[in-house]
Length: 453
Image (cartoon, rainbow, N blue to C red; front, side, top):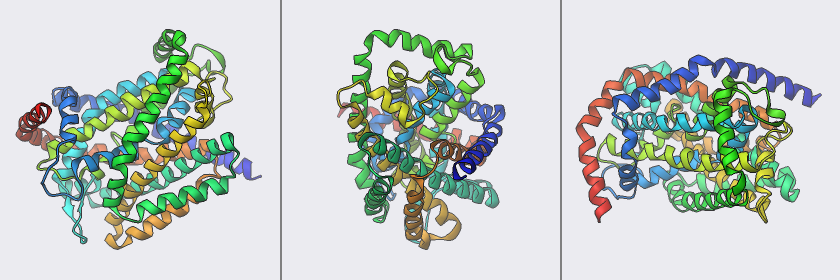
């Protein structure tokens, strides 16, 4: 009975997402990325300078360093979505979904830049003396759209709690598969570790992410490279498969035959947005807290997060799944498909378990901060600790829900974030261009000096 209710709920949410993530949404997300890429004269070409700036200390005002804001954003972005979400995109949208994910991510760097520029420009100090910002403040201060700002904040909170479900659900599934750990034990352990970090506030979160994010990224990149090397003879086939299914509209083998071009694009773009968050505006919340002398510097730094998250980690993850996973069989989804792909390596299941644990933990930490700031926008600074405790309670439910339901709920929430955020980007586009014209040359010079030192 309970299973049938869960299936009906999953189907209902999926039908809603089919409408939310239809042609108009894809046009909005991809279109705004194309637009800013063109008008900003391919801001992506400054990627190396952006990475250089992220390592340079600043004495400007802000709650955390630019690097601290960067790793909080990456902590929230680089989660189980980079492993389980990519695997889910391949199993539901075919290998072609990976192509559309990468293409949309390249242009999304311009969107990420614009979001951060506006977030810093319209940030403010709250009652606790912390710099806060993000699309809700942009909508309220820049456009005087208070109700729309509240809608964005509520959607962000919904996405945050959905993300708590996703990360817990993914870890429970993989721990149950690899070590037969009881779901209750995995959930309680994860809740305890997460609570120990997030209850310490933004500075403790930033300090924790500064060492966790680089460590987990290096471990997982090496793991993906190991899988690819083990199947090096199949690499040309995998690349051809990705490109063919991206444009033919049908996956080329196995049970995935029948996947349409629309599904490949839909799952590629939506999972890409869920991973790198460009278009949703969430990363701008972290950018607003940065110690930065002007909006452009943090905009450049924020744009680099899409490169690390999607164009490096998601790409390697997707290639590993296509080259070694049974994605065409139709019976494996998400964490199970990822486990199947990485089982080719000696101890691969254990290495995947470590990576998933680190990724889930970092995302829980990063998204708890976003959720707290979204609720604070609506209810005031005093609710922060209460939000963190509620966050931990929601985590306790995540391990017992259907994986497909959890991912569909996340797709719903992030779509509701994208709509008001993209509206603000469009209406304030001239503000982005003006700030870029004023500060870009100055920051590129600073980046070149940093590179020489």
